[in-house]
Amino acid sequence: MSRLLKYRCESEDFFKDYLPDEFFINLSEDQRISFRKLRENHMLLKKKNKELAVLKKEIQEKRNRLKKLTTEIGSKNQSNSYHGKLHSSIQSLDSLSKLFEFSLSVGLRYHNASNKKSPKFYLRLNANDNFKNIYIGRPSDIKDSLFKIRQFSFDNYNNEDLKLELRSLYTVYTRYFVWKNNWEIFFSKKHSLKDLENWCLSMSNEFLRW
Image (tube, rainbow, N blue to C red; front, top):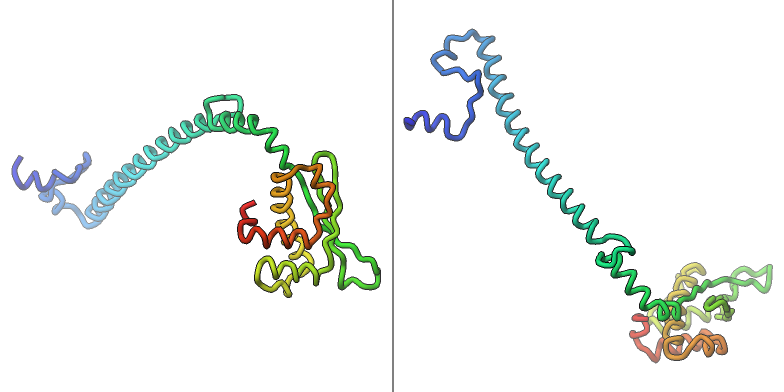
């Protein structure tokens, strides 16, 4: 192949309607315009087909990856799958998990119907088919304790904010207490706001891990 042809053909695929320059210069203006459009669209079509082929390849690779991941995850009935191994692990720790199963909620009581500004906070905890109601205190008492525990002011916290803080703290407190003792002893104690405060202070920042 001559250098000229090599230069003209090596990096470009000529379509079947390619016209040599000697023929092209004899075309009318309209024919030249049409021919240029033909060449331009041929090259664009080729470029888009290449892009499409790349996308199809990527899609197929992702489909294969998706199929592999789906198989690896599997279901709890497939012992070799991740889901199956997880289920097996949960079953072996079932008794331990149940030991720490409990729910709690924080509510407000207004002992004076005409005074809605300073309610009393109560916590209700349910576990092992048993429950315990715990008196926590008034907003001012709670904010004072939280300040000692967290070392920043809670003056701008409303009642709903205080509920969230109390739920969080009593959750870690309860989990630790049951781990150290048992539910029978837990239900026999008061677990006042002062008890919560003293426990948090004795644990330093470690109480957050529970």
